[in-house]
Image (cartoon, rainbow, N blue to C red; front, top):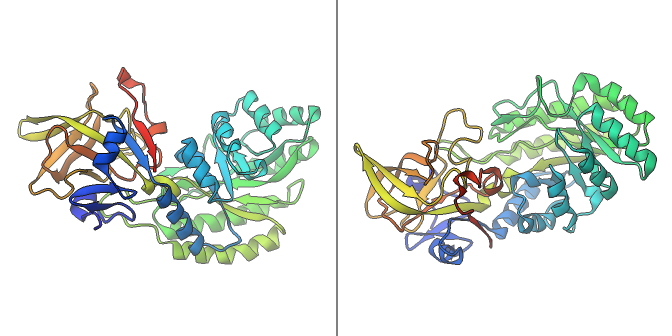
Length: 411
């Protein structure tokens, strides 16, 4: 039985309910709470990740490669599983690179993007033979020096395009940005790359994230291919990889609908011949993180107190923003909205009420749900936050006020 809309905004694509208890990977959440030793926990389900990748593959042309952006969820077990499903991995730090290199993914199918790579990370990446998405002249010069002393580092240019992904949750391109090299400066940088002992691979163009409008993604992909085709004329070698990023979103809030994939897949089928004509032999790549793992995870904490303050019910829990910053609204939300939150061991509940779910921290920002419609809960009941497989544990201030970290379970 799927989740009721009143409890989680809309039916969830994966989780269901039996005997009024949330099931995660077919396991009652109450059993998982015991496995976690009574501590707050994240649970991620491999099967759900596999299903999502299969859905995406079915909608996209077979020639398009799929890469997993590890920053969405860098848990080694998650990355190891994703590596068996996708064509490549993207890392954002030397630490993530070490995890990626321990998977089945070949080094040449790993890329490193990030605006502030250290000299040690550049050396580490060059030695591993991965693709380094260079984001400044500094990085190019440092890699050129490494190339004089050893194997030629493999580089792609991350381009800050002259457009942005409209209606995206976070705009990663267009206008002044810390990411990539401004499109108008790329030809000069390509010339410099050609003068150095570097192996030019291609381009990385990422314009935004968390978008639920297929038309906006289609437009950004079309503009990315056109931009790459123009820049390819100045490239020191043929373009072998064109990574046009992702931006695919998942629904978090009331009224949001899942991203329709058919229109995006149809557009990619149109773009492939254009890529083949302008950049013969180039591999077209889309790079996704949240879309692949976000809906495959749940965060669960326990109610420790029930308080009524001037008529408003507060469920005080042993977990909060220190475990799940995004659900608290402090990870990029301009206007705070509730993630899908429910009382996991009484999803429907015989009695319901409007209550706010808060954590144990000494700040009013510690809020997981504000005046949400929930089953009536008491101390000992479990609160679940859905859509928590991405940007949860690793994106939160786990050390804030020195509370215990949540457990991470991989099912």
